[in-house]
Every structure is written in C-alpha cells, then in structure tokens.
Amino acid sequence: MRDVETFLKHLYQEYEDQYPRSRAAHEEAKRLLVDGVSHGARLFAPFPFRITAARGPYVKELGGAQIIDYWQGHYANILGHNPPVIVEALQAELERGFGLQTGIPDEGQTAFAATLAKATGAEKVRLTTSGTLATMYAIMLARAFTGRNAVLKVGGGWHGANPLALKGVARTAEGFTAVDSTGLPKSAEEEILVTRFNDVEALEEVFRRRGEEIACFIFEPCPGGGGFIPATKAFMGAARELTRRYGALLILDEVITGFRFCASGVQRLYGVQADLSTFGKIIGGGMPVSAVVGRADVLERASESVPKRVWFNGGTFAAHPLSVRAGQAMLDYLIAHEDTLYPALAAKGDWLRRNIERVFADRGILARCTGDDAEAIPAGGSLGWVNFPLREDVPLTAPEDVTDPSVCDVALREKALKIGLLLEGVNVVHGLGAISLEHSEEVLARTLEAYDAFAKRLSREG
Image (cartoon, rainbow, N blue to C red; front, side, top):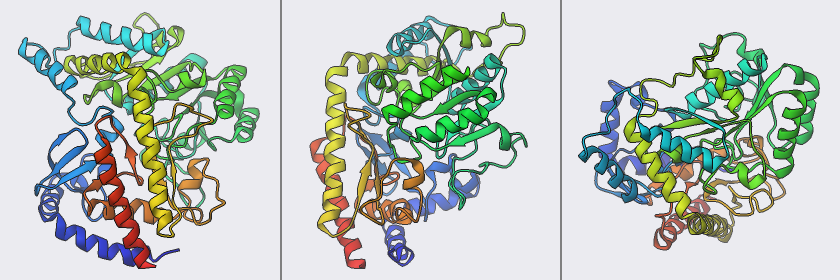
C-alpha cells in the first residue's frame, strides 16, 4: 500500500493553486447550497471545479482552463456536451413558439414513446423525469402486481435516491449490508434484500430462501457505482429464469446502459427481455426525461381505471415538451447511425482502457480497467473504471472487488487519480467514466498523456 494521504496533500495544494477561482466560487456556494452543490456525486475534495461552458469533449473552467471531460453529464452525453443535433432541435422548437411547460398532452410524447417502445421491444411506456423516480415507480408497480413486498437487488447497485432500494449501495466494513439513508421506514432493513452481482449460486440461494416473498429483482446490467463490470451471460440468464420460476418480476435498470451499447437496452445483446426496464440519461439528449417500459399488464396498474392503482403520476415536469423533443432527436440519431456509431465508440473505449493499463505498467504500476467483457458484451463498450489491484491474481467480477480496500487501492483511484488528472486538464469519475463520440483520436491521445504524467508522478512517490 502506498502512502496515499501524503501524496494527496501535495496534489490538493497544487489543485488549489491551479483553480483559485473555482475554490472561491465553491466557498460562496456553501453559504447557500448544502455542501455547495445540488448532488452528492458532484462533490469531491478539496472542492469541485466550476464551469462556464461545455461543448463536445470539453468543459471550460471558471478561470478559463479547458478540461477534457469523461463525466459527460452523469454519463448521459453520448454525443458529447451540447451536440448540434440536439441544440438545433431545441432552438427550432422554441422559435416556433412552443417548448416550455404546459401540463397539457401533445403529440410529441406519443411519438417519443412509440420510438422508445419499438427500440426496446416494450408494450407500454410511462414517462417521468429522473432515474430515481423511474426505478421507484417500477418497484411500486412490481409490488402492486405481485402482492409481495421484498425487493432483491445487488450489492453496490445504485438505483438513484429511491427509498425502495437504498440498501447495499455504499460499502461498509461488513460489505453491502446496511441501509444507506436515515429517514427511511424501519421495514427497509427487512424488505430490501441484497445479493452478490454475477454470483449465480448466491442468487439461487436467496430465491430458495425468500423466493415466495420477492416482488422483483432489480439490477443494472453494468453497475455504474460498481466498476462498470458487465453481467455475465450466466447471471443474466439465471436472473430471468429464477424470477419467472418464483413469480417475481425482473426489472433491469438501464438508466446508464440504455442506448449506450446499442440503440436499445443492453439486454438486447444478452437475448433477454425484462418485465420492466428503466431508462434515462441518454434518452433525454441532455434534458430531464426518464421512462419505465415493459409489459402492458404490469404498467396498466398505473391506470386511472384500476381501483387500487399505483400513483405513477411522474411529476409536474413529466414529458416536458423540450425534454421529449430533445429525446426524440437523440433516439432518431442513435437509431439511424447505430451500425457505425456504436462500433466507433467501442473502439475508442477499447483503445483507451488498454493503453491506460499499458502506461501504468510501463511505470511498474499495476492497473486494470473494467468496463467491457468480450464474453458478456461482444460488441464492447465506451464505459470504464481504472482500478489498482493489490495483487495481479485478483479477479474483478463484482462491485465487492473494486470497492474493497483490501483488494484494490480505492483511495488512489477515487482521490489521488481524480486530482492528479485534473492537474493535467482531464476530468474523470472512478478513474475514467464515459467516452463520447466527440472524444477524437487527438483527445484520447491527450488523455493518455495525462494518465502517463500521473503514472510518472506516482512512480516517483515510490
């Protein structure tokens, strides 16, 4: 183990010297905003930088620095920041005198739902505004449809700040076992069950013990907070078979993976159809829209015609006209360019992940990227984490592995690498993040130089 804390002190001081205007802006923000931000994922030590513009692969920091960005709107911006195809669609909508909230149905949401349903193989669609709400409503539908209360999820799985799944998100000394938030009903401890990702035997065991109580099994096919490790085909197949056998619903949370690997949910590449799926991020084209899609008989539980219906009303801004217009433009573009766009993204991802490992190896540092698995997703992908295993023989197959300080140097990835790369003008999350179509060969090469500079700095630290 390296002395990461001493290393961090030096990095933090350089970072503060390099971004003084962001530091001042953050101190001002803390006077009014809790922690100076509006989302916990945007906060990091010593302070988050602040931006004035964003375009393509770049964001512009308050002091004028141009930073290559792999956060890309919480992984939403597959075409980069503010892509012309979306900006122009929104401008046209506003120029014709439409686009702000009305609260009255329009044909745009019907067209968007039709496009989403056709692409995903869904029978019905219901729109809302965030991934958190989509997963919450999906679980409510499953509980109403089955008449059961237990929700099964995987350790390290993140389904937004959804009170029906806020257990086993953050790792504790005991693993992924604790309820993550105060303020939840006491029943959350018993009603939310947690199993290990990609562990078929553990999944079979929990269904043997509790299968008659389980309303749904919800998981991300490639956990965003757990290494971007794809589900194995065996695990995906077992999830589908076991939920059917025990009368539970399979919910695939595709808020991150939807339209990231292909112009549909990544479940299509596995040959699996979930009972319900949740989509968000990419499908909004940079605007707030999410959806629950899937079986008509389940989604109809939200209908006004059902006596004891699920109150899936989605919020004031559900199907916001501009969000739907941006989403339509995004889906149309991705579907039309699917044959060329996704192979190009996968090639960028493969090149960057493999070369990041190489530059660290050249400096005598063991690094391993997760984010693709040829067996699970032959098409490859454009997501990635950078991990620093403590031994070469460590398998990285589940969130438990990449978040365990006894398996990987978590502080080096989450703290030191984050700041070290920002000193070189590159912004990452969990060591890397999401590659967009706008990350050109030149941008990727510049990114690799930043990793190499960090590797040199780290090797000097011993």
